[in-house]
Length: 175
Image 1 (tube, rainbow, N blue to C red):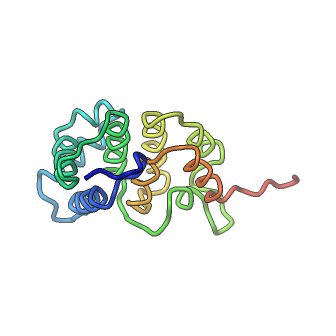
Image 2: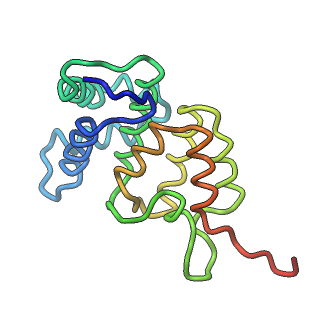
């Protein structure tokens, strides 16, 4: 059963993703989970992510959770981006990506205004993946797992606008 909105993962896919991510993060994770995490973390682009056995196994589980309904190719790229990025997330927090990338304590943001603007300019899932892959270490890999999945899978003008409102833009002195 597929979701009506092509830019939303759906509850079944989210449950599978969340369970998979939790398996990757266990301290006593199996050798396979550690190997999968390592392979996905090394993937520098979406083609590499999509060609890993780790992604393909997860993709098949997600298709099964959707009663066999697969995704069109543009959604497969977005799903590969989600999976590749989740391998870099170390802690599931309450913070959305824009909140995690900005500071609420008056100090410098972990992600600079320039880097954040470049993320907002990402035209597609591939560019967004590359930018976020470089950004996640700046926030120590702490973000809300399902929020990241929703935002990357549903990357659109409305997501960009929501991010712009969610980011705490630094105050300019003397302005």
